[in-house]
Length: 226
Image (cartoon, rainbow, N blue to C red; front, side):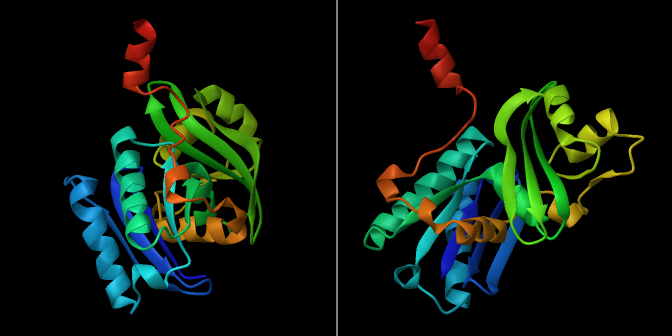
């Protein structure tokens, strides 16, 4: 399948074009600019350099969360707009935590995806890899860091923007729990493509594509107080 994936769930903006066997083009940029200024020009440039158009793709993939509320909305809105403009091409939203696990899918064993949510609280999920595919064994959630540490077991690889702090706090003396190499710790759009390729049944229409924040947004909290 020919796929375009974008991830705007964190501090980096990234996009990738893949064909099921090869990463045709990929770019990741850590920037102070807003994702809305960067992601569409980046995606269009990568498509052009790959010799493809939106109409020639089989699906569009994006990170659906958890992550930055604003960033997720930007990425999902971009994918919806591209899909509707190309005759309503199929879309897929992939968990940011699952995508992070696919960064290190060659590792055999437990993969702990951990992202900072707020003080003492993390977004986390635990995955099991056989060296080729990853399977969720501890459902994605927002939880106390201690809860995720207990689910990690005694041997794992950590990935995500909070992996160093998580390792230092809970596993400083455990050499069997390691952080992923720095180049693989943060979001990679090509990992979204791998996750979708593993289960294409997750494709939905543009209208059905929604974020999975894992916790109430600020607007939801205000609404509950009314």
